[in-house]
Length: 238
Image (tube, rainbow, N blue to C red; front, side, top):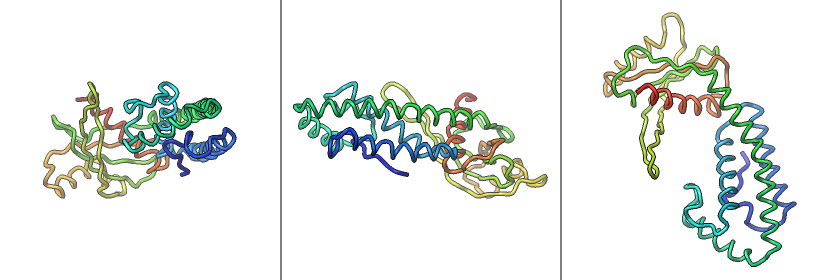
């Protein structure tokens, strides 16, 4: 995918038409991917840049706490130096504000499209626990079926809890295990038994069967959304 630098709107030549070309070229590829129902990493990258512009617009002094975590101290220092050079140039600031406004207006519809695709994919997912779920279901396996495809993808997962300010968030780490062909004799239930026999370090794992009734791009769409949906499902059930 085409990438925008973190500070693309104030780097290099400050020229509205030039920055407009860079942005529209980037958005063209984003929309091309969305047309193929390919969400990641495009959607998360787009949201990052959108928020970055909003932060800049809201707080032009560019304080360190105004930036998303993805920016390092070195990035912030670079932005501050750049800002100091252009803040005295009223013409440059007007161009930058025009660039930011144009970018926000054009990124917003693309983000809405991406979120609509996300919501649609999530609505087509069905998650079912296999057998008895242990009291601590934060480490186990899930089997992922993509539409009517008989091949299932098996992953080990571990849900992590981390704190940010005053809130706690849950993330998920996954590790690909294997694939298997689902049939009458080879079901998610038999898969669970095989996993228990093969991996002794998880004698009583939580196992979930995640299925979409429509096929989607696996790596770019289905798997990322399945991961987030599983975290939500387990959190609500716990």
